[in-house]
Image 1: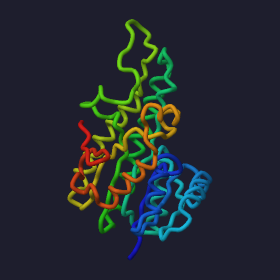
Image 2: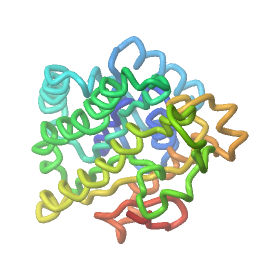
Image 3: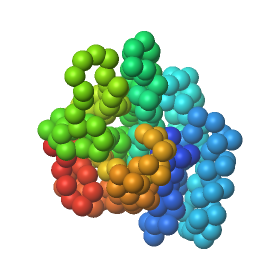
Image 4: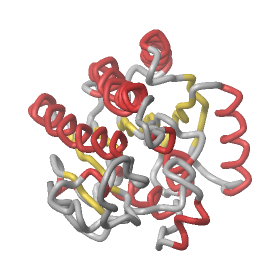
Length: 265
């Protein structure tokens, strides 16, 4: 049986790395392309992965891809096309959270929003656009977007932001509350719907995945997040793997969370 080609962007740390680890452990055959902005970071991540999973039937290699750099995306696509000819699974995992950089005077709020959207939304869309033709060469293509529980509008007040109210007057000490990150992930949900509509008739199964509050370094100190109930990042990797392996096929085209939950808009 030939191995499925799985590309994970932003996979040298966090949920992307945990997804690669989960796939390495899988009994199903995979060749994993570990996407990273630099090959040195990819090499370090791969070495660490093989420390955790020293024996596996699956294979792994680094891929230089910076979702904020169109030339980097094109180079990655050309390499995949020349070497593998297809992508079976695209996991759009790369993302950032810059909201902690917004001061109380919000002088840099515009740049924080622009930089966040450039990577989380524009970059993700560009990767998908460039790699769509390679997905369509797969016999069973899957397209995954990493979103967040903080993206839900219906569940806005039931989230893990510690500030549930703010003081009167201006400026607000707790003004930021992950504005740019949350808005960018809400945009990812719409992006998923658009790509699902665009590629569904071609046989591509598409999801937005909300892995839950996990103790990664992207949105804060992992130890502080653990005190707020954050779960181990490995749960996120296992969840993404379960979607790749067909456990949530009935929920394609939706924003999904763990344990069979559909996230409200």
